[in-house]
Amino acid sequence: MRPLDGLTVIALEHAIAAPFCTRQLADLGARVIKVERPHSGDFARAYDERARGLASHFVWTNRSKESLTLDLKHGEAQAILARLLDQADVLVQNLAPGAAARLGLSYELLCERHPRLIVCDISGYGANGPYRDKKAYDLLIQSESGFLSITGSPDAPAKAGCSIADIAAAMYAYSNILAALLQRGKSGRGCHVEVSMLESMVEWMSYPLYYALDGAPPPPRAGAAHATIAPYGPFTAGDGKTVMLGLQNEREWEVFCAQVLELPEVASDPRFSSNSRRTAARDELHALIVASFAHLSSEQLIARLDAAQIANARMNDMHEVWEHPQLRARGRWTEVATPAGPIPALLPPGQVDSFTPRMDAVPALGQHTDAILGELGWDEAAISLLRQAGAV
Image (cartoon, rainbow, N blue to C red; front, side, top):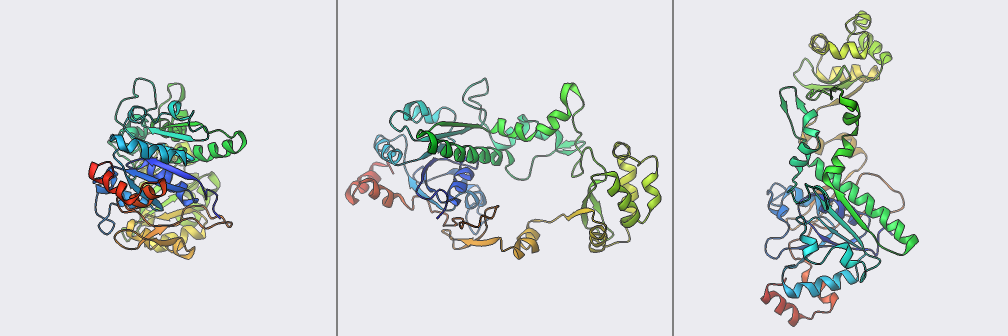
């Protein structure tokens, strides 16, 4: 038995934020019915063809769901959606600003007929305020939230390599829906959950925001290095490979100098005798460290860092992550079915010993339309008419 077994989620979703939220609800056992446009579906299906002919984003965020095609602007579709909501516990949507309200799907309109329904609206900037109607894509929210201002090299900002703003919003939607389900268990009533991508990312930006409180200078862009701690970041070994290392305190600095650099006198060098001095002399320190590492291969360097108990990591590429020995040793990979055949998938982070996460197939567009309509009371002839009318 999974925690959300027996719960039904209706998802009017596209791209990443809402689909990643609802996929995690499906991981916990919820039945997620994904409503998609006939013929085209979620536009993330066409982002690329890298996952054995399927889109990488779509494969990641849509396993364990049922796909129902429905033209929400068609008159016949409204009756279908109404019956879906009659049996639903949660409605999640990240349509364009105002679109759900125009379709009659605002919480205010739904709560009287469906008092136990939890409605989660995910948007770029929220339901009010001057930015309410602005389009919001992941990179744009990275920019508005200040993330780009502290990420990258000193001469150029850089975006995160994954959809970090979408992921942030998805995680807050997911956790707030779980909280709303707990609250409903006590009160018997549903509620309205509203999640803004901007607010989600600004929450994640709180360390640099506080660092720059009262007009203080913000953390500088420092590439892959830590902006305010040194040494902390990438260093090149003698074989040309990059090793990440990080020090947190003066005791570790002394051990690093003695056992890794084998230059114990550097620890008391006035240029490097505190973190603030090391940060100010970052370039000199980096040159000294790289010169010391020049005679070591990356494997020898990591062995020396491990022996000294200095935190370190390899800078893996995607191929190395697929083969990561730690993930394999812990059995974190499984497979899920897709329209293109089985594909590897990471088990959801967090191991709970009381249930196994749901890892069902990624659906083809409209794969479950007939079955769902049959459940709702439409027979084969009626479904055929709906198809002819373009409603499904």
